[in-house]
Amino acid sequence: MEYSIKDLNQQGISKTLVYEILKNSFPVSSIFLKNKRIFNDSDLKLFLFFKENWLDKTISAYWILKQKNELLNNIKPFKNIEKPFLNNNENSFNKTLLDEINKIKKQFEEKENSLKTEIEQKNKIIEIKEEQNQKYALLKMEEKKEKEDWIKKYDAINEEKNKWIKNFYSLKTYLIVFIFLFLLSVTLLVVKIFFV
Image (tube, rainbow, N blue to C red; front, side, top):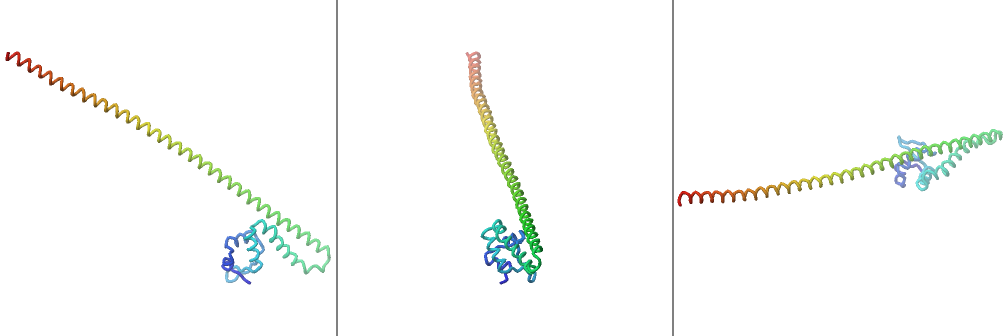
């Protein structure tokens, strides 16, 4: 049976999973129909296996067996020819298989190293953000403390000003009373001098 990506999606296989399999060079059919890629039943089995077991198990189990079977199928017509030729093919097959495995290992190591560096960079970014948050919090606390100090200074200056104003007004009232009494005594003295 033939499956398009849409049909695979109905089977519960996402596009990203299909692209992941294609990206990792798994042996899938390369049939195109009206510019759409078509997959067969063995591809569906591979997709389902990949969905359950992910990349490591799929590489170690399915991909290598499938590749080996395909290579053995290509060798079958030459089995009647001399044996040394077959041995050479088997050796070259083993060599290519080992080369492929080493290549995949290198790819995994490179991917692992890139992921490690990415994680380290993200951890550094998180540390820097935490430091900045702490500095910001300290600055906010200092700003708040400085504000409170300025408010206290302002209140103290206002209190002193109010004291001076009270003292001034109380002095003014004493002065008015004193002037009033002085004028009263002067008028009484003038009245006594002139009229008595």
